[in-house]
Image (spheres, rainbow, N blue to C red):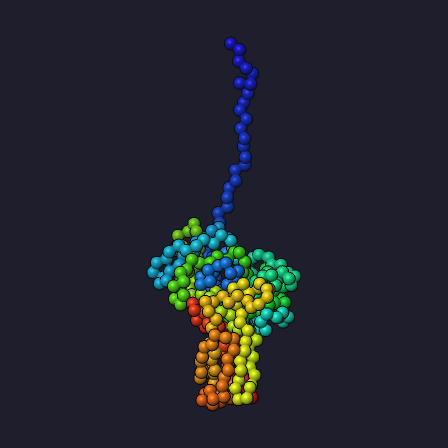
Length: 335
């Protein structure tokens, strides 16, 4: 019997080196929960965001939420680490929407890189960050120059302050030790009902492969305000005297599609146009009225009835049917 020679050939076996994965230690993560204004306009306006950093990054981060802390329900998954740091220098108040050319803000980040951008790229939304403290309000700012002055230590300069209506949340000074979170696609928005506004929310985050009671899970809490619904403070608040009356006027701003440079006013963004005007004696409100137009006349008779002593302070805010009065613009009259 004849047998073909190839039948005696040894089989060809494809081999590849064995890859042994290195286990990642489950160290505690660092989550930051932020109640922010609308960033793009596509997100849920009432829901807060979460940013998470960890070294080393353990993979997917599970986020659970609770109203009381008695039990937690799965909420979302964070796939990408965020760039989170602490300020090494203070940041003083500056005029919003103008280039802040003050001293550089030095920030120590855990890891990651930043880039300097041209002015046009910043004005298009690049290099956006938030500065604040956990559980508090956040100021959104942008920066054009980012210089690494030491390992993972960055000097941020040529800033735009109080962006997206957060000039109302800018204090006289952000002290050293404040948190800075770069606002990019690594942020994840929590799944929170609109009815949760005004209530406390407890958030627990940790490696998805670990149980929720593992020490790598870290808890944060905040009161949900839904700042994406808050109207911006009016701009260009002016007062002029006409006889004994004081005539006030202002320009409406919008939180929705405000960067569309077309003819006419910006979109309203609210169900109806309403404003709340408050007259203050010191910090005490002595008169409060609402108007449907961006103007108000403080009549001489009303001034006499209010009998304000010292400088006259008047505040104006746009009113949302869902949020209520937004941020107030203030003018002081001293003659």
